[in-house]
Length: 409
Ligand SMILES: C[S@@+](CC[C@H](N)C(=O)[O-])C[C@H]1O[C@@H](n2cnc3c(N)ncnc32)[C@H](O)[C@@H]1O
Image (tube, rainbow, N blue to C red; front, side, top):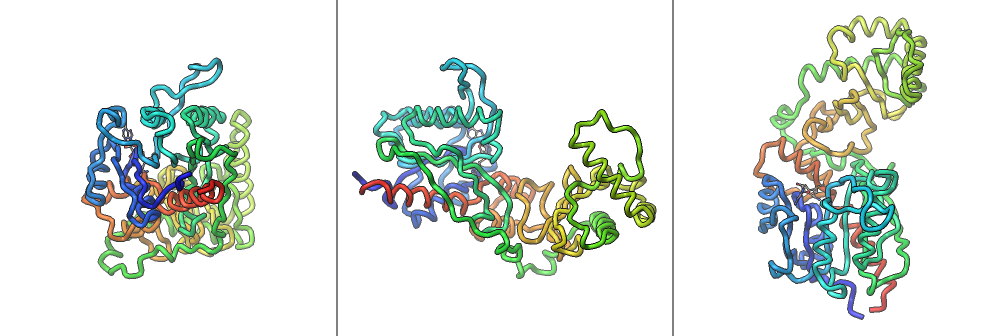
């Protein structure tokens, strides 16, 4: 049997975004793999992709007909498809199907080739929630449809985050790996050696060559500083050994007694915890609330606080901070929260500034010379949408090595 893949394999990059998969494929193949085409509907992302890879992605995947367009079947299909709920009913009694969804487009492209000429390997990616989405029905449907197209699929998506491959970012993703059944048909029991979390440090991505001017540019505002100072004082009201706070702080509940029995249990739990905390430190908390005019001048979201750093740090400014809709969140400086978009951009506490685009590139394992022709807001949106390139490379490499060991060359 021929090799699973030579380093000169071909692939297609579906739902390409700004090329997280492409970077992984380039890196794995030492730049020998050839991308036959990419597909991406968003014009700004297309522009960034072309700027970096010199290949303009085709647009809407629904308009791609590979046979009519004269494309040979690629060896590998990559795709970070958007998650959608699948319809009830369908071609099998009681089984949902994916007709009309973007996932189905991947299957359509694969099935446009005759069975033994179909791509050898599939690597698809989605949010972790895919595994439990719609009580597991979405995953069952996906598994079923890939399998029906002639593939041996991992029984469960592999959940992997940058932190598992040594990059200090929390960002669990579900990765689906599949191989054509005529190449390998035994159950796939792939496992990963994950990097230990306590070996990570955010310092590895912090840019220590940042100029004073840039520091100024990314500095948090005076208002943001005051809010953080206020929460820093709050955390010092609680003795250090009691700072493992397993619930969000909701100051609106401090000193309140209204009936909460009609609330869901989880909410009653949080409220009761907050009321108890208030009673324990009442004198200090009253003084703090008065000093900072919590109820009079803070917004509803900033009146909430999530301390997720336990006893590991002694100040808000020692952590990684985010202003979120659920409140001000502080985490240990071991890893960054998942990059999402500009609005929730993490703050590096020790320097009281937001992460810069070059730090965001490192968090996503994109090269330092990756180019953007965009405003910063768009850069963070595109990077927040992207997949971490190293996560894909490690998953792909492990899968190919796994298959190579089991398939006689
Ligand atoms: C989760 S993102 C994938 C990001 C990519 N993995 C990366 O590294 O940047 C999904 C992408 O699918 C694109 N998309 C959505 N509908 C599409 C369609 N009909 N055709 C092609 N691309 C589409 C979105 O614009 C988005 O960039």
